[in-house]
Length: 253
Ligand SMILES: NC(=O)c1ccc[n+]([C@@H]2O[C@H](COP(=O)([O-])OP(=O)(O)OC[C@H]3O[C@@H](n4cnc5c(N)ncnc54)[C@H](OP(=O)(O)O)[C@@H]3O)[C@@H](O)[C@H]2O)c1
Image (cartoon, rainbow, N blue to C red; front, side, top):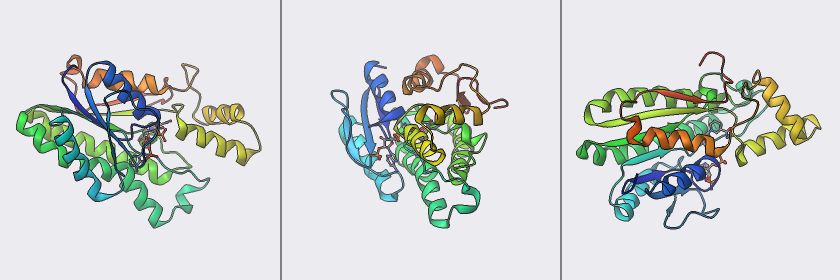
């Protein structure tokens, strides 16, 4: 991956931070984003403050990548997330629906649009969309998030079909429960709601998911390893695919 130029959104924590670390370790030049600076980025990683939910920020990130890296060969649309609530199908108002769609779908759509002309001109590029198993099996506590991730997956497939002939590969990944700060917050809220503790909340979540055959939640590094493979030349004949990475949780992905 030496000499490749990569943009990873949401790279200060969790899955994004692990992807940044992995791409740097493999020799890529990396620019990452988040709504605020945070964490300790690996040496040499550029940072731009940007919110996936803010329309103008995508063009700003693409311009920064052009200036700082000289272009983009690899784009990982990882920024995303949600708040959960017990009866989300009934209790999510319009504003929260819009925010989920902006954060989990439109942020990626806009950044792809800003970066793609360069990839198409070079006849090469790789994009990964970080979706979720929630796109396959909606989370009761996150209706808008699940729908936004399903939309992201459908859009990702469409993009792959259109861009394959122009030399750009597009894949999506669907992680299951992965232990990051977002997952820890979810466990804390569940524990507080049930008057239990983190471990019991984790057991409740895993049981609610129908169990994880590999007997553990994922780590950010598990996810980063898949992303590193998908953006490498080893995956040269893989595009338009959904890569579920969930310890075997989904029964019918
Ligand atoms: N953890 C899981 O179990 C799991 C499972 C399936 C899918 N995913 C997906 O994986 C991705 C990463 O999740 P994670 O668990 O690693 O989350 P995380 O630990 O909360 O980290 C999220 C990262 O993205 C940034 N971010 C959040 N919202 C953003 C926004 N609107 N614009 C720009 N940056 C933003 C955060 O920094 P700031 O807060 O400073 O912006 C942080 O760097 C998300 O798309 C999530 O939906 C996670």
